[in-house]
Length: 99
Image (cartoon, rainbow, N blue to C red; front, side):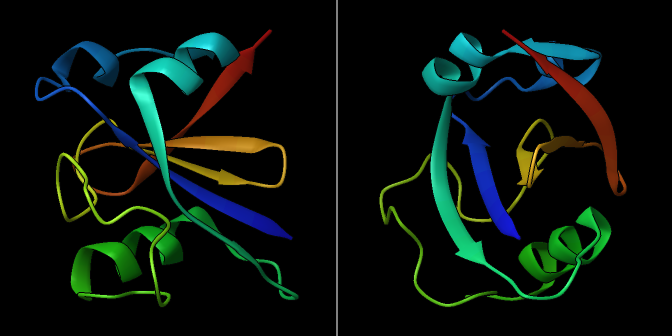
């Protein structure tokens, strides 16, 4: 199961907070892929969010060292297989990525 984490590039994530859908083009332009890994076990997005919030290097070496923020914050996206989840104040919510 492929898991990816995207960090929001802008400083004001309040705009993305209320969205239910994000286009794939927006995903690749306003978000940057900072981490990706393949897991054998099925994971839920809450566990990934907790690891990124609590630990310094949650799953080893990140893809990018230069990032706009170092910890997971409001508006970031977690992708697990074909499902996408946006980080909210506490936990994550499921969003739809449209073509």
